[in-house]
Length: 172
Image (cartoon, rainbow, N blue to C red; front, side):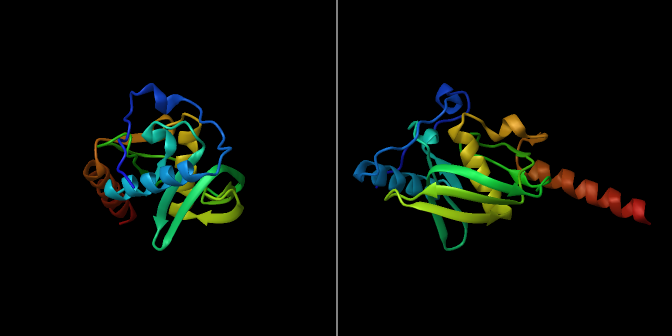
């Protein structure tokens, strides 16, 4: 396994549409292993192949304890609800975060590293992570969908606290 370089916003590769994975071979396994190691080393919850410069429809995510997903040729079959006010960040957009509306629940289909079809339901943070990584495969960054952007989590937390205090005062 190896740590791969994560490409950053501004690199035109991030805006390209990834191609379907057709070969479920050792090279794919090596890519997935490298992506997992790279994601963990950088404290990420997900990482798409395009973020390491490989235009293949594959991503990894570790958005829930004890649940690592390797998603090849993923698609959303159904979605439900909205998760409007959750903060989102990206390893390819370091130092920034933003508010992005995502579905609360998604029913998805993807293939594992051996090519076997997998059907799952993700909720909450896992649903957000799946949608975020799927967007990468279509050349979309979360900043394209963000309704509000922040320079860091501290700025977001200060604004959130200010809004909560204002709301409490209005209730008095």
